[in-house]
Image (cartoon, rainbow, N blue to C red; front, side, top):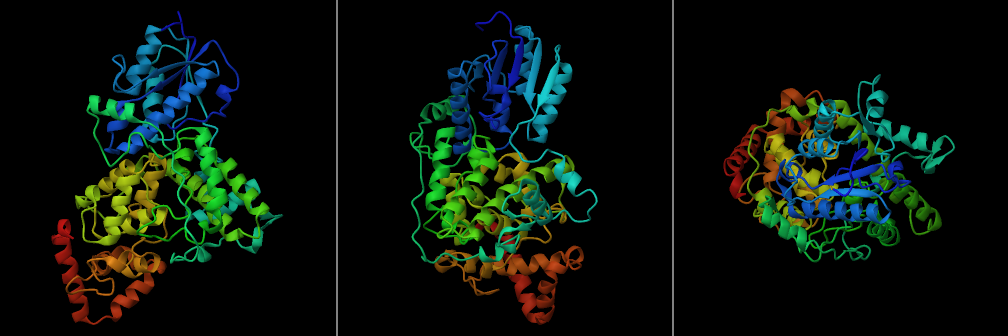
Length: 515
């Protein structure tokens, strides 16, 4: 170290790259910032190679930005000889060796890291202080406080509260357009109605990071072009991507946000989630830019597009974070249906005859990305219908997507996708037959299986597995009014038809690896 003594050591985690944080408003010679590439973070689940490289490159560029602004930074690379595997080992060593007088950190957004740092802080020989990330529009506890007197934790109620609180898309005390929600208008299948914009891709060089992972023997999966890394890793790139979205994709974002297409992995989605979840971008600045674009181009961009986007950031993103902190640590163990089946191997390879699964998984392996309907109604739908252990589903989602951090992925997986919380987040299980997949995509058109058949040769697995799921879990689901139609339909089928469907589902489950 170049300094004789570090007076204040401040920790910055890999998802705390918020250049607007009050910490950085002035240069302080008494402060040293600490950033670390840690094997505890690369190894807690198996990660997509793009996720590891993306986080490390974004961290390195943020550290360089701090240094250029005159801040003192200690940056430990994964292969540095004095870098211990865990966060607490490194901090304890530096605090002791450098005689630090104070340790400060930004509160982590993941429960496991929050607990780890709080326990470490108690053992350090100097005072500690935790600061807010200054990123979210709510505190950890706001969602819990909002729902404290309510029987249901529905996002829609919270979303309306946030619209009023921040005066977003409001006309005095009423929602713009006299409607809170335009979701019904945002469910169109894409069949070439308008041209698809080419995705804006970056050409970041992560070859040195990739080589470092090889040297360290870091486990990972997925595909990468080390000299053509496509994701934004700094604020300049993130703002450029935001501008591109506003100019080229926003006008049709809402309309086709649920659509899926074989030959278009992005459609009209913004691809801003990695920049948001690393805190390179602030959600309010993104929402404000979207609304400004709508006002300037109201003849081209409808309110439905803007409301659909605002709902994801202002509603769903803040709601999921709040639900995470309200339900943890119990959320991590929830398994309402008692599912225990192992995750099929094709989740890691895409080698399956089910075209929707094949395309979604292959896309995820190629880009470390799939949009919310691909995650919920393809890979999540299949996992729930087949009774996959939510622990394994969660680990897969956490590992494969570049924007996956625990505070958002755990409640999305346990709550929304797998209904493992018994309905605290979602009001019903999000499962479907092939009819839904066919209605929102072109996947079924070139599939080995027939989306029209419930049973028989080449019948789509989603169909028989769907009805088996409801039959098997009738005791737990029959009282749910949102699925009453399913049970009425099931009960109207004759016994022979039911028997054929359940027999077909059983055969598929027994041969799940060969589907």
